[in-house]
Length: 390
Image 1 (cartoon, rainbow, N blue to C red):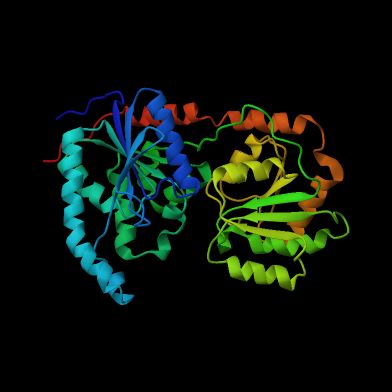
Image 2 (cartoon, one colour):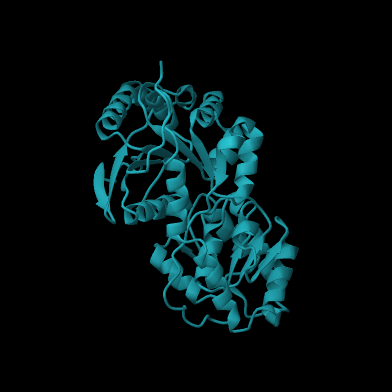
């Protein structure tokens, strides 16, 4: 059957995780679902059921969300002593595949958009070989950057899925460069679609002098240990500086111990994970947002800081220079507490104390609109279907 072009009428978004889980991937896909629905597209979300306490089906902000168990009998489960997961993969893998084939056959989506190339990819590969739909793969970060830490089977699935997809997108040009180095054959069908942010209608309140905000999962790649080591270097140039650190993760105890060792008990507040509304309020009360990442495929926190009208001090890694281009922001080398402290000192010295700072950053954030993001994805969905498998 010859390929033909069809407008995106019905789209299935398949994602590794979704709301109410909090994170960049979850909010990016939720913004896309919102934008597609506003444009008249019938959109639904299929995601991994994790944690298991989440319902198997619900409607969030008008979008139907279904949660399935995408499990295969990986040998890694046996090596880790997780015989329960191996057996579950043997039993549930075929069941999930049949459910997926049945759903795709009944709903006939214009496109299936896989966000984050993970556990659902093998199932979509089989479905794509049997049924007729346009497959779009969207890369978000760890699915690319963490590839060599995964199994040979996962690396094979990564490459085959990208080759079989009709279109590939990445959330930043930096991430796309990494993906192209891993799979150069996708160059002709790959593009960059930045994530979106919603800019508040009214400016945020006046910040608290000296208050710095950092937000993210407490893992090594976020570089929060570098930020903690930078704070003592500010005692003379910015004695008022104090940090609010929002987030949870495996590094929480180590970071709290480091803060105590650096005698920062009165200058650092660990709040744990907070809902999006609390993060937005915290940004409004902060004089600057600090992003000390060692790796950052996009930089959603930076974009949210711009939307809040706040200046940013961030490392020059990944997608951060793209997000912060033209903004009131200081970019410094990664993994250097001295460089980060200097950037914060420059900020405190009055580099961006003018009233126009907030308006400028909010204007830049407005360019990353939900409508713009949905329009860009719709163009990918509207391309030709794959030829029917012989």
